[in-house]
Length: 351
Image (cartoon, rainbow, N blue to C red; front, side, top):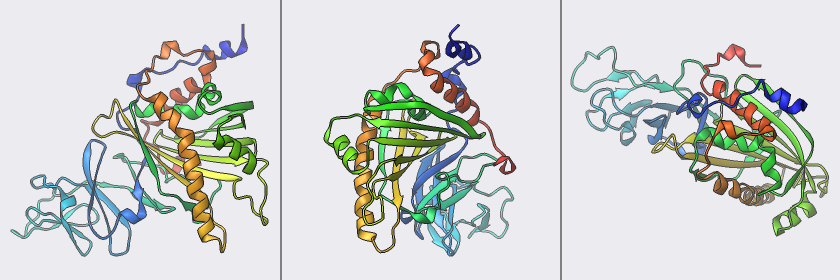
């Protein structure tokens, strides 16, 4: 028996019902500059949320529907570090507990808003899903956030469930089609954490359009993709070109970083996904303008690279029984994801 087929006998792709509507994990909610000293509303987890900053600058995220009568707190104001309801003036502290009611002294013990774990990194703000335990906010492998310069993010709305979006990084068959990348050798795949699946693969750039011709000329013809998906909600991809020319001791085209944030679309969580991509590059001393120009060029190329996936995934249908031997990386990824997207991982489990 073919060893590949034999090894697949122990693998079964999970049914669609194995994936939760909202996976347990970290979600990217925007750039740091979007959150100031005024409440900002967002829709996530099938709920209305509100985000604001404390006087010390820390982001705080609470349920936005006031405990009292459900008014939208994102339409309220801030009084110091207290969020003021626009309807009756109730004031909530950063813990979510009501700390003041204008009409009476006594405050009901249960008058509180759910608080979400929030974190800020590399000019971006993230929150964790409503779970009792969470793992620390992940980032690019072996990379200091302070060393990276982000470009403005871009978004796609794709007509497929969230759990199909991340399969593209493990769907090795499709790279030779819409992306014109030929796989060189076998990829290395590992589960680096219960909530993280990593793949490292090297490709040859084979496309003939102007972008691929420029890529070969200025970056090289061989690229290694190092991608880690966390819980299906965040993917960190590092693309390293092996033979990029060095200019003045630098290789400006050698490495790029792409963070993909994946979440169900609030209006149709089972049918559509919001995909937000932020591209980064390494900062260089004294070359701020050129760095900003370069990261925007990288953003343009990466957006064009990903665009075919968004078109082909739109309306994609998942039938586990139709997957074939060549889909074994996809099958293993989905089997891992069906568990990782539901598990509440304790901090001490982190490696």
